[in-house]
Amino acid sequence: MAHIPTLVEGQAPYTPPARPLAVTLYGDSVPYFLAQRMPKDNFSNLVVTNAGAPGCDLLDAPVQWTATRQQPNDTPCREAKAAFGPTVRSSDSRLAVLMPTLYLALRHDVDGKVLWLDDAAYRDLLTRTLMKTLTTARTSGAAKFAVTTVPCRTIDELQVPPEYRGDFDKFPQLVAEAGHPKRVNAIITAWAKEHHVPVLDLAGAVCGSSYQPTRHGITLYDDGIHFSPEATPMIWGWLAPQIVAAAR
Image (tube, rainbow, N blue to C red; front, side):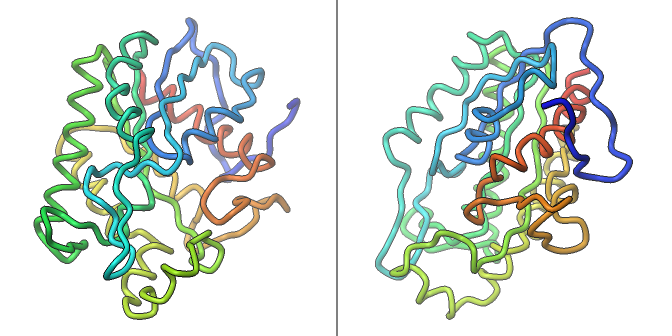
């Protein structure tokens, strides 16, 4: 693409690093499709390795959709988690970027107990998992590590199976958090500050003060979760300079 619309007014332009910068992008299907659809010709010397896995929760605990329906990590997810460290090492990545999943806003079965953000044990599991990811990246050779915030969505657009939607009405606070993951992002940001990890505020860039379905006439999401192919270059226009800065 010769021209990419700006995501945020006044955002930093992309300045190619003097040498190729190897970066591993890690998380669920959001980073997976971002990496897959990256307009590489617009971002010279930025070499992105795709370590995303569609449908993969950051946490190892199963998502508790309803009283009787759970979603544990599937085999590709477990394999992707096991491969994260080796992928960072084999790609010689200087920077590993974690893009936490929207699943964090949902309830989980933690050791037989259904927990959510109101529970200290759940918040502790989240921060321990963030720390584990950071440690894996560093011990695998990444000199730098960064984490993004989770963008807002509108719950009506999410591709949630109909059999799961009934319970959503019982938990309005869960629906609100899934749409605007303020509490999740507060935990991520506080943890990152404590451990001197750069935060790439994707939520702030995409959402601004409220949910925005389009930018410059471009639809941001194609299914309520993933950035549309048309919007992906615009996301990268903002994200790539952030990555270069975090890698310094």
